[in-house]
Image 1 (spheres, rainbow, N blue to C red):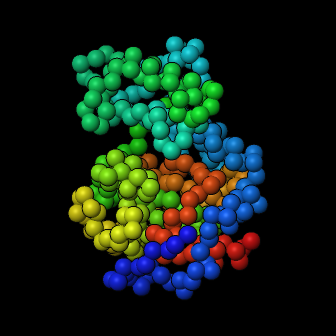
Image 2: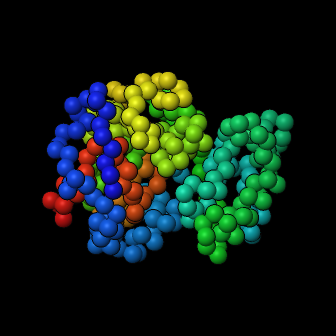
Image 3: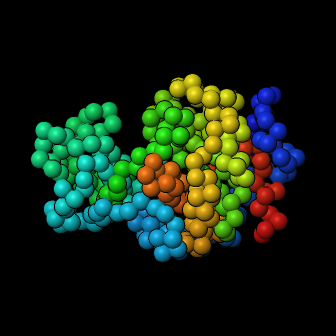
Amino acid sequence: MTVQPLPTDARPGLLSRLRRFDEVLGMNGRNDRIARDNPFRSVQLVNDKHATKTALLAVGAPTAPTLALVRSRRDLLALDWAGLGSSWALKPNQGLGGGGILLATEADTDAEPGGAWRTGSGRRITRADVVDHARFVLDGEYSGRPRDAALFEPLIRTHPDLERLSYQGLPDVRVLCLDDRPVLAMMRLPTAGSGGRANLHQGAVGAAVDLASGEVTGAWSGRRPMTHHPDTGVELIGARVPDWAGVLDAASRCGPATGLRYVGADVVVDRAAGPLVLEVNARPGLQIQNVTGNGLRGLIEPAA
């Protein structure tokens, strides 16, 4: 794995340690760490979104409530449509890579309650559309499994301070933790190129976040360093993640809640609810090293 060079105008805070190749954690080292520290039963747990939410709530970690969990076609027939409200997110319970997510941003005022909604782009989705989509989810279309469940949650409304930094989509904060100790953090900001997804491999911006302050100290899109968001033009360097202490607290609870020692916590900041754990990753990627300019080996091996 190669580490990208720092921008020449990077702030001193971006690199507080010597940047040596022997401090970079490669794929083999990461896999060894996962095999050693993440029990199989815990990996299975975090592959189940609803089970993960239950475990998080048991230790006081904030996460979005569940509106409905549809496990079968019988559950789908009995679904309380009006109880979903005017906005919600439908997710495959064991989905991969963000596929199969359906978002309703507002109710269609021309339909009865629970009869139709609008997406963020204004497209109308009817109850029949949702039923069809949920059936695909139940059949494992988005999880690669013979059976899955459809999870309905309230729609997350991004905190205004983060919304202005991003292009559509839902920005999140990836905090990599060892046990309950955060070791590195970055924001992932959707772009037009990423299709509104907070996925670095699809073109989202990765922004290094200082653990002590929650301040953005550098940003990358692919191999390009940047100071401003490529689509919105908003300056990223110096921006602060709102309720940073709450974000770190939420992330630090994920390992103890799930039994994972080496864990990537994806945290979003809702404008009303504050920090919420969106997902817990048993196999977090290594791009956080490129984004922050810090090798993981030097950060996690002393605590091994």
